[in-house]
Amino acid sequence: MTRFDVIAFDADDTLWHEIEHYHDAEAQFVAMLSRYHDKAYIQARMVETDIRNLKIYGYGVKGFVLSMIETAIELTEGRVTGNEIETIMQFGREMMNAPIALIDGVRETLEQLRQTHPIMIITKGDLFAQETKIARSGLADLFTHIEIISDKKAADYRAVLQRYSYVPDRFLMAGNSLRSDVMPVCEVGGHAIWLPRDNTWVHEQVPDVDKSHFVALATIRDIPAWVQRTEQGY
Ligand SMILES: [Mg+2]
Image 1 (cartoon, rainbow, N blue to C red):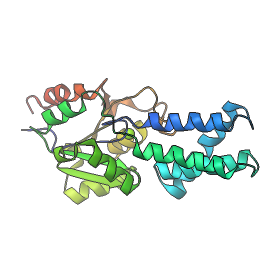
Image 2 (image 1 turned 180 degrees about the vertical axis):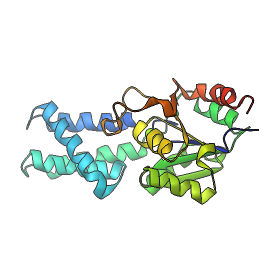
Image 3 (image 1 turned 90 degrees about the horizontal axis):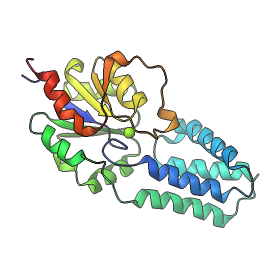
């Protein structure tokens, strides 16, 4: 008998590289405004604006672009030019159109796991952007369920589990973010695998977390063996 009824995966920075696009755009943005202010100051203000705006725009590139524009207007005291705003919009278009680069081992691991368990995507963000990324990833056919939700708090996971009649104790979620993929899943009584990445977005870093409710694995390739060990004798 299997221990888990479903294995769910986060998408951005779990299945494919995403945060690098944000860092690249942010570096170009900071360079563009560096004649107005110190780079560290620009970056700090941009991060502050972006996090503040999450509750207005939600997660994703479009909100990030609006936050860059807002930061540029503030930091230049309104002197930012139309051409500079066009450049910022171009950063956003490049992010949206960037080819999907799968993280090493993703396809093989998913193909292996789906032999024994239904697999699922649970991702947060802009519906259109996430749909197109999933389609362009070439992975969509591997998944039994795909859920694109606007946030990943405990209540959001509870709603997803209810929608599919999954029992929390038999639900396993894997992702790169402690804040979004691990802690809320543990909170609802599920199980989580944390796949840490070096450059996890500052908003996603959660210090001093109780590590007894989940396991951290080095790469997605380690999941099948962990699942097999966990399910042995179950
Ligand atoms: Mg992620």
